Image 1 (cartoon, rainbow, N blue to C red):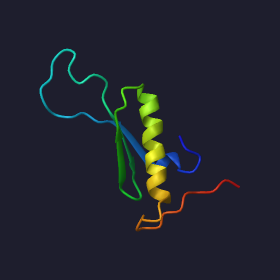
Image 2 (image 1 turned 90 degrees about the vertical axis):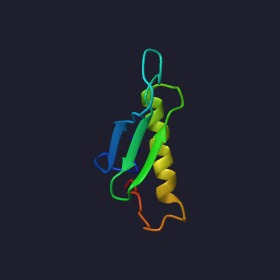
Image 3 (image 1 turned 90 degrees about the horizontal axis):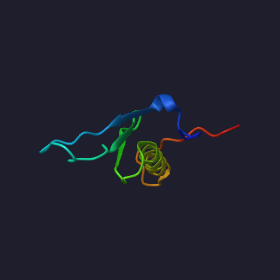
Image 4 (image 1 turned 30 degrees about the horizontal axis):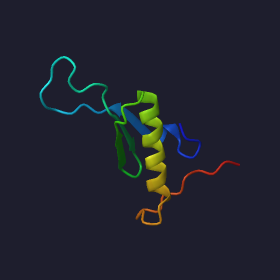
Length: 80
């Protein structure tokens, strides 16, 4: 996880989409990461491993939290 976002603030799940199923349909499930305090959600399905998808999703959440356009002004914890 990121050192800037407390793990307790993140909810990581596998995102299952509806639709036709069956063998070889859907492949690996996308990873859904929600930053609970802000409500930001990132869903990533790069075709890579679930671990890699989770890291990309967390980076997306961090980018959203540190964006100057973030209305709530969430400040990630600083090391120190």
